[in-house]
Image 1: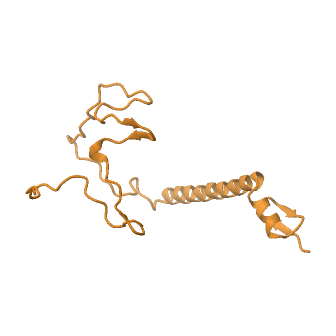
Image 2: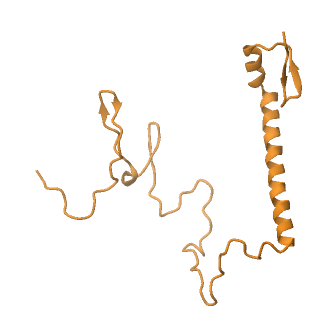
Image 3: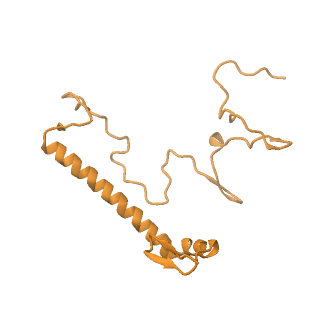
Length: 145
């Protein structure tokens, strides 16, 4: 019976049966070897792109600003953020502009304005289609019955 060779692990499996191959491929060492292989490959690709870009820049093929974004004209400023003087929120703290969440039996409940109604149930399960609007459209209110 032929043996199976795993390229990632650089080893032969004793038998070439689907169950042995599946057991090997789901093992921790094999998964780590596959992850390491592709991580190394991605690093090599990134280094190749960095080297090519550096060579093109040194050869004068790339200008100082390769993306064509012009700097803003003199005298134009971006307004500062609104919370410039406020300390950053502590981890786990909710910023004051976000409405508080209520706790339900299965976890936090979003504020009512952000909640959508549950999907309508048909004979074959939930009825698919576009989701209902979050708010009523602006304009004439619907007629009262």
